[in-house]
Image (tube, rainbow, N blue to C red):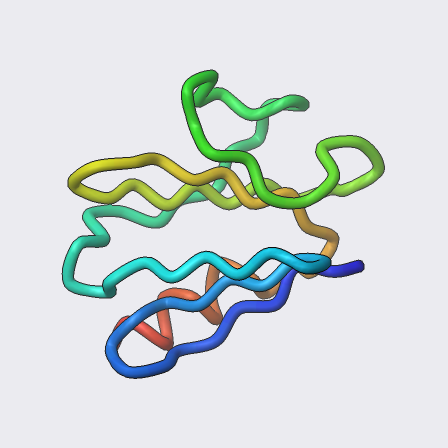
Amino acid sequence: MEVKVSEKNGNLQIRWILNKIEIPILEIIEVLSDDTYSGEEKASIRIGFPYGNTDRVVIKTKKETYTIFTSGNRTKEKILSLMN
């Protein structure tokens, strides 16, 4: 049930349960950590279970903001490495 992140055809691919979200890497403006309990960005697309997970990663794009709730403490670093 963990959020999985990969790169495919120039898109950041986020998989969680039966959902698959693709974000064009060129549209990503910023990737940052969010230390608040429920996520600071209230109008974001939320991925993962917000409770019981220790890390929150926020992806800001030109159109949307995504908040990933995860226990994988390397999710942010993996996203940043896939962008390069």
